[in-house]
Image 1 (cartoon, rainbow, N blue to C red):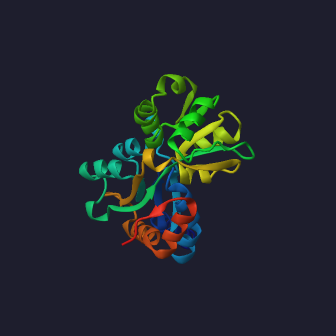
Image 2 (cartoon, one colour):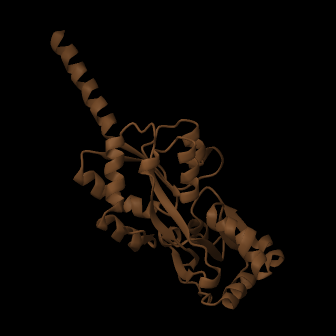
Length: 253
């Protein structure tokens, strides 16, 4: 009986140790491709295991900020800088841990093999939007910019908005790859991550909107040591190289 109890205690201790070693991560869509590529390096170089809780900002109850505010346990958060600032002010993210990691530009994608419109100029982009039969956009930063600012600025909102599909529960690229939208507009790193999508290019510089994304460690992180190790990896030269490869512009220090 004694040996059986000892065995059960050992199993419980091992389970507790495994739980402590987990690093719970929430990532928005723009940084997710880089983060996911770094997981194997993170796990091979440490005694930690990454547990991915989100790979997009999400909408409604699935929104990263909503989940954090409701108290869902998380260690590391990758999200837009302005959203991170809100979480810091509200006490959900350790202020000293907040760090900007990358800049991200908006791009346009088409289904692989389809003709690519010439969007190198503003006039070319305008023509592409007007001629497209359907356009998929993100429900997040890039989509909000397109509908609230860019299309009105180009003077084509009334013609283009009826053709727009706002995508909130999956990458825009998935919709484009399935042929359900002729054009997709989203952060470049997100479009490049989807097989079956060809990146046409970034929005012209005159109308481009570059967003900054940040990393932060939760105030109530179950594993702050593991969280710090993951953020350090993202900030390392290896992390910067992966971010650049996925279409982000690393913010160097």
